[in-house]
Image (cartoon, rainbow, N blue to C red):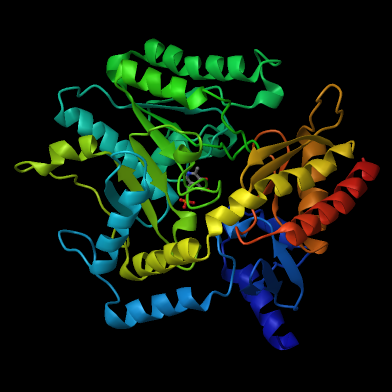
Length: 457
Ligand code: PLP
């Protein structure tokens, strides 16, 4: 890019572009990173520098960048039918994708409601839960239980379900009626720290305690990710979801598996529920369904939940103009074709142990407290003291994560996120096409940067 063009873009970004979750003051003394193209697992900035996309953009780019088949599927659909809403009308690629997703979803999750992204899918799931119980004689059921530190989106309902007080405070009062239970952070287990299964049982049982406390006749749903992202990848202990299922059945509470990150191969399966062998009542998904070549989300519901909407004057009075956009659903179909033709999930399952083993090498660094995750989805928790698990807090966390790590990783050629929504972690979720060479590159850059971070403390 010519220097003049670059300078103009930089200035225009500062003057006009309001970036998401961004501290704009940080651009007073350095450039806005401008990414101009991608190829495979790599992205390139406006100055021609290459970065390994170790976060798949934002847990999105399952197939990596530059897949012409997906671009062509979008162009073909846009030429044929650029737009049609799903408001009492349908179009072929939405129908075909709904059928295909229903076939892949566990059990009788056969009803697919499209949205434009993850937050809208979460909103849809909560609204469906409330509406379903109103139509089936339990009109008081409306509350939602979710987990501490979990992120479920930014719209007012989804943000209310989110378990991050720091993210919510300036927007309060949010939608009332959501409640938090402990997550499955075994590294910092408050109970049963030496017995993973007992810890999982305890954590699941806290959902029953919360339902009892709130009154079962008022609780509609529990929202859980298969592997919780915020806080740095908390996989479920063995038996956790089976116990949650039992609790939901006992109290007639809907289990919503929020798979906005975990679906579409991130854990080596279509859905995380499949990997951990549980049956949700709803799945919310987005991101990887199109590998990011177009925006799309979905809420997948069981037959039971649609039943009351199939009769008489009933309808689910909810929808989005761009939900199930023809270009997005056509791209999703082409994306799923590639997943299957190129055996992408098999590749994840074959390489996941190597990814874990490679990242676990970092445990020899004094700053690395824990390496956890599953599939191609990991968090590396940073600590001040390995023996006591003392964490970085306040100014120190600020200095380490924002002041040093994020920029240093990027400068070394690694695009990922240093996150402090819970304890400080580095989040990793590379494209599903990555292999050992990429794992090694991630490990080497992290080693260099984390080593330097430690010596600066
Ligand atoms: N739910 C989960 C588990 C997520 O991780 C996210 C986003 O990262 C969302 C919901 C919100 O999705 P979106 O940003 O597409 O609205």
